[in-house]
Length: 209
Image (cartoon, rainbow, N blue to C red; front, side, top):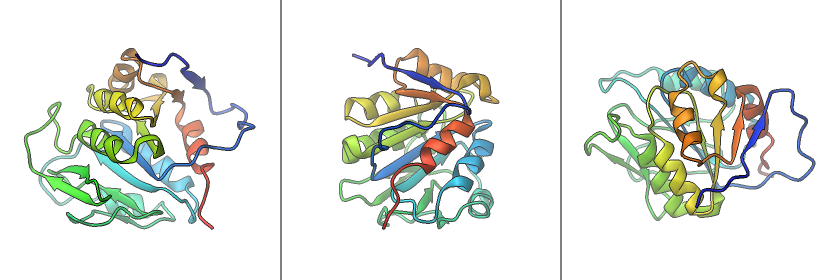
């Protein structure tokens, strides 16, 4: 049964007094309007950010994609398109290649698939979120951003069922609010944040030594 303790927070919300929860992996999904928010999130991450990061955005299937250099320009962490079988390493940002589903294998490596589109999309946010939930459980944080369909809502449901945490962008702050609204309507958001607050909460996660 979906949990009901959904928090809403604006950019001016005071920092929490309790220590942030630790995660091994942060997965982020977005579509229309999501890339601009991604730039805000990645720009604020410290160089010693501890979790690995995996990102799925809905991109045209044909390369080249300039997303990786655009994100790397603003991020203190290494940003890359991973190869199949590559280890999911702490402090790295792994971006799904255009035209491929990106999944997490049980040995915490990357899998890439050209299986059929899911929710009309390949890469699919649901596919990443669901596979990551099965492997990382409560050590997973999933973040759903602006987008024009309901991709990601089912994935967040699986994240929470496996003990992970789900954050959703405040729909009123989204260029395309359909995606965050679908997740909220499904009751699968632990917290709903304005992008500035989302960035601050993400950057406040424990860093590596």
